[in-house]
Image 1 (cartoon, rainbow, N blue to C red):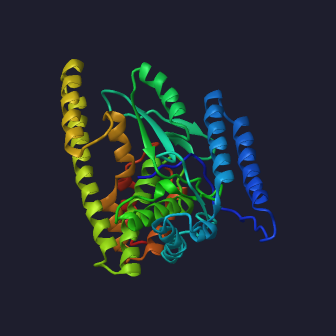
Image 2: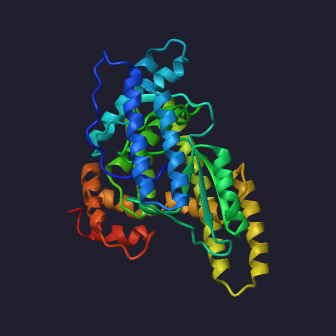
Length: 373
C-alpha cells in the first residue's frame, strides 16, 4: 500500500547535471525547487495548509539531501546484495511501464535509505456514524480525503484535535508516495519488502506511482487511487511473467501475497457494507455504536490488524479498492491494450463530475459503452 502527498501536474524537463558537477550541487537544485513550490503554495493557502505544505517541503528537502544515484546504490558493495539486486530491476520496471502506456518521467533514478519504518504517515478522518470523510483542499489537486506527514509525532499531533472533535481518525504508515510529476521521486528503502514477494511488490509500487504521473483527475481521489491500485496489481503480474516466467518463485510468492490481500479486502468490504446498512437503519445511536464496536472487533481479529479500526480505516480502503469490475471490463473492451485503456480514461480529465468522490462505475461505464474510443 502506498500513499501520495498532494501535488499535481505533468512532469516537465528534468535538469541534466554533467558528471563533473558536484553531487551536492545537484541536490541543491532539487532543494531549491522544493522551497519555491512551498513558498508559492503558502501564498495561496490557509494557516493549516501552510503548516502542512511546510512540513512536506522540509520532508522533500531531507529526501533530496539523502538521495544517491541509483547506479551508486547498486554498485555499493557495503549494501546487502538482495537490496542491490532489487534496485537493479527499477529501470527495467520503468521501461516496462512505459511500453504499456505510462508516461516517461525522471522518477526513480535515485535511492534514499530511510531511518524510519514508513515514508509518510497518512491521517484520515470520517464521521463516526456515517461514511462521510473529512477532506482538505489544496491548490491544483483540489479536495483530498487524507494528508501525509513525514514525521509520526506531527501526524499524531494533527490527528489529536480531530479525535477531540468527535471524528473517527486513522493514522497509518505508507511505504511510498508520489509528487505526481512536480519533483523527481526516489526509490525508498520502505518500498522494499523482506519476503520473496519483494520484486512483485516493488514493481507494483513503481507502476502504481507512475500511473499518478500519467493520469490525475483533480478532486477525484477514489478514482485516482483505485485506478493506480488496479494498474499496479495487474501490470506487476505481467512484469513478473515477462521478466522471470509465470512459474517463478517470485511470481508464486507475489500471487500468494495478493491472495492474502484479496481475502483481507473481502473482509473489509463486508464490514463496510454491514456498517453502511446499520448507519442507515432506524436503530438508535447507542445501538449503532454497540454494533459497530462488535463488527470492528471481529474484523480486527479476522484480518490480524495491528492498529484499531474505525470508519476512517474502512473509507480509506474504499478509496484504494473501488471500481475494479468496471476497470477490468474497460481493459477487456480495449482489447487488453493498456495504452488504449489509459487513452480512454484520459477523457475523464475534462469530465464534469457530479460529486467530489464520484462513483467509479458511473464514470467508467460510458467509456465501456463507447467501445474504448
